[in-house]
Amino acid sequence: MNILKSIFGGGANNLNALDAKARIDSNQPLLILDVRQPDEFRAGHIAGAKLIPLNELRGRLNELPKDKEILCVCRSGSRSGAAVGQLSSAGYNALNLRGGMMGWQGAGLPVKKGK
Image (cartoon, rainbow, N blue to C red):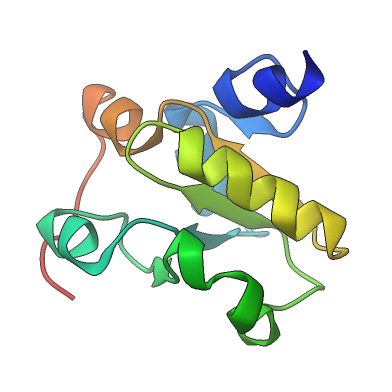
């Protein structure tokens, strides 16, 4: 049950879109990690996000800082929930964007297109 909560909401490591935006804009911003595929990323992502597709994450952990909170993002929150699990197991402080980019856009927040 805890795994489902961490993926789909209810867990302490989940942020909704508005809370995530507030954290991104704060004086302690999050590193935004987009775990979708490159074509999804180009179609629209959060400005400043780093793209590492979920299937590449294990082999690219060295590209991520351990001293910063990481906000994982995907389309709906499922893949990013899996990324949070991988990162947490490897000693990272990771959060999931509940609802993913669908939730972000549904809240009327800005999206960058292209790379």
